[in-house]
Length: 144
Image (cartoon, rainbow, N blue to C red; front, side, top):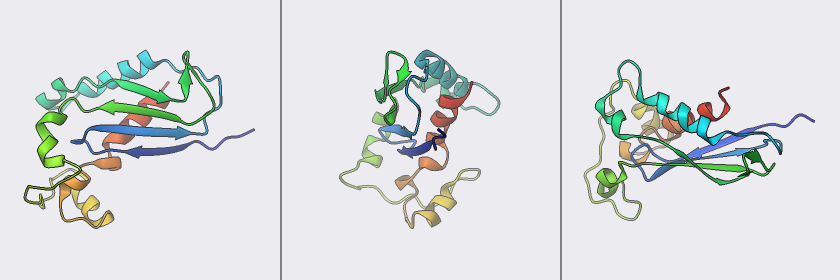
């Protein structure tokens, strides 16, 4: 039986965390979390990476759908915490906005596309959102 795999991602790159829900994985599929975490470290190297990448030692946390290194057949929920959240907490707070809107898109980023797609006036409301960053975890999950 062929299964359609569906991905849902959420979170802003300067928010609390990034999450991914993967639905449609068959049960008993072996998942090596250590391999995923190793692959996440590869994001820190490469041409054009800033010093900021040195502080982001990303590790994935499995919230559901995997037990004993194997998929259960139910949706898989993955979470990557943002260790730099404290530096952005005031500007990215979910309960109150007390800063001026950030309105100038950054060159080479998806800011302008996000302003249009999500009908927003403050770029911080989606800073990369599912446009770029959270998709990285999905790519790492299925890379073999």
